[in-house]
Length: 136
Length: 136
Length: 136
Length: 136
Image 1 (cartoon, rainbow over the protein chains, first blue to last red):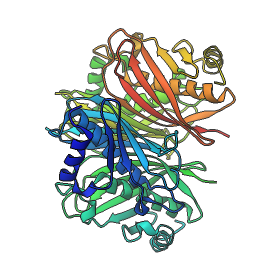
Image 2 (cartoon, chains in turn green, red, brown, blue):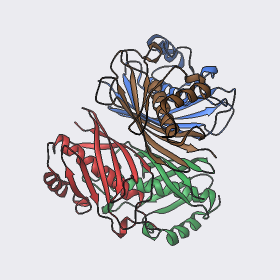
Image 3 (cartoon, helix red, strand yellow):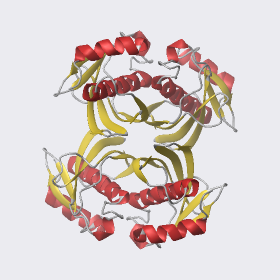
Image 4 (tube, each protein chain N blue to C red):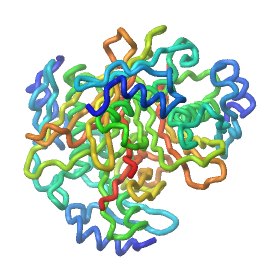
């Protein structure tokens, strides 16, 4: 890995102050990239479910962290596609965890998946596929 | 149409207080469903571009409004899939407009598209395809 | 447009002999790009419906023709993503028509849509979003 | 599992004579669902790559086999969405293997993934996400 969880956290705080404090980089190593979304009121929809945009934001950030871990802070990339399946209602009062995998690290395109879990549930609540375009 | 723009606005304010004030239902009739996202600081990313989650939220809300306009407030539906292509950088300091179309209004699934424009640009900044599952 | 329907047909026959005779370029001009799939037995599934792979093939070819019409025969591009919603059962014994639109013609990525119709039905049977990566 | 690889093969031969002989059910048990596409000339494109429609057909069939293995031959389901990322060029002269996973087995929707490999390569050539709607 080109960056540790600690380095990624510092990089995000400096470059993306808007998301600072929103997410926690739980793990970023050879075994897994895991991002936590501490769920608070503004993420909720009627019925206590987490909103789609909050899950999208988690998926996008988790994949961005996976890209940083793989290519380092020099890389600039923008999301060009996201396909997300919402499969189950998240558990009430639980944080969400996004587990990101890089499937292709190309010169032009980076492709991967993020599985989103409610903490403590073993089946995913959502699964996202993302494509980033590498800026040159 | 089963609901007017005014009725939809009142319905959203009552049922989704979290998004109240975030979006404006510009038009909801036979010709078009158009939702405005008044862009403010919290929607922005470094470089002045509108964040992906903000565009996702606009697409999801615009399609929900299209569903309400077509089937009325009794219908309950949840987003099961969203596929979004981010194609151009939104213009700085401009609101976003989401233009929703229902392609299939089935008993089980509702499918459609949302084209997202920066106000004043004629080419779309993003295009989303959404599927809603009808709750029974 | 950089190529006419006739030029595209000749180009496909020379470069893609595998699909020669499978599809007809009905129209390729400023107004529309329309490709016909003459439906024969090998495209069918039990119940008389056209198979998913046949509709995928039509979507992919229709978008490729749209790219050729827009950029000419020099351009080399490969499909990197296709998202397809199957919405209605095609009418029995009818050809399929694919209507392609280019939404973004970038230096790296070309993005667009294909609506697929059973000839004579006014609602689409499927809608595909495609991304091509431009080879350099 | 509700059906073995042998039972699924017999079911497909009886119900889908069009695809009989096209694919081989390599494995269908608790550990994995694996389908082989023996690649022959008609699957190829110029340059020796396997065509997109052939990979789509493999993904769709592999996921259908996963559904059969999980719910048995009584279930009727139709593909409503497929999102496919083409990531690498398949190796010349190698069969393709599709590895299917069911992520959600709902009463209305069945959602899952298929990873496609060239035999002998450890990185996937394509990844598909599929949704089936359960007919009632």
